[in-house]
Length: 334
Ligand code: KG4
Image 1 (cartoon, protein in one colour):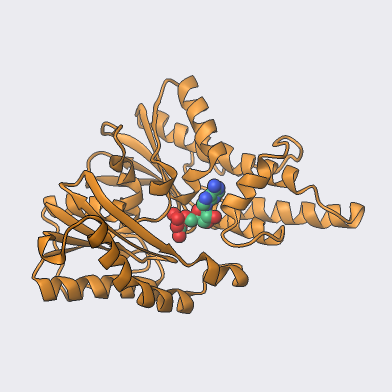
Image 2 (image 1 turned 90 degrees about the vertical axis):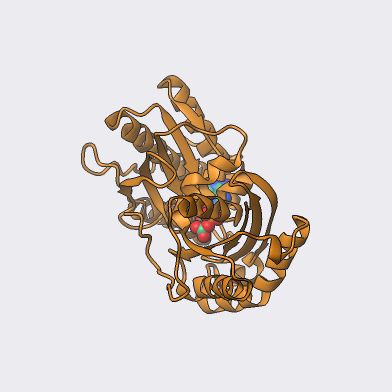
């Protein structure tokens, strides 16, 4: 079975061809970072216009690299939500049109399911059940995953997502968008213990996150330092900020595993390409005798391969989608 995956939920236009739900034949992506960087964040209207310009080429490129044509495709899987409505509409409408024109079934995929299952694109696959930490520009969530279609939300952010916090702190330090990779690069030159930024644990036993207080703490620190010394120790600020985010993400994931008596943890989402998060999670999982599975960075950030994979499993479970279906901005996996 050949599945064509299409992803356009935010600022990456991506397409992929997956065989039988596990062999990736192609995965291509065009990033809009160059368009949005001068605005310090994603401009929704520019994002949807750019998807419109790229979508046809991305799908053609994915088919061509997989050495197949549209008539070989058995299923089209496209991101239906959550995300920016204008961006989603471009990819999902194009997918519906392709489905109609080629008489191939279409399945709408929740973007979060893609991140939760993206680890199955790797050779080393986790057993069910597992605890999934999904951390990206729009989400910080912990799920209990019991099968390819059975996800229970255990905790989520009450304000900023982890990636959003990285991007906002990067902006206030004068780095370009997206700031996460730039912060982690700068952090590698700094001391994570230099500044004691707050860890927001919330109520005892809570698996929710909150990163807006940490962001304000960084802002206050920067204002104080500028008044005192006229300049900022950016490597130390980045390392200390990153450590505060990573520690909370890791400890809450382990708490979820403990609360539900689960011995396997899985990471997903753009922030899980952060080297310190990967290292710290690995270290703590070893200490707690948990097994950790992390996708390669290219499968952590937005991609269409994970959408094809999640779509394949949703379709196998009998999920189909009518060509009247619409996109949605908030995840249905709650
Ligand atoms: O999953 P993703 O590609 O897509 C969206 O959420 O749209 O995640 C993008 C987010 C951005 O906020 C970016 O700054 C963050 O992931 N990110 C990182 C790193 N690489 C990407 N954050 C921290 N460290 C990184 N190395």
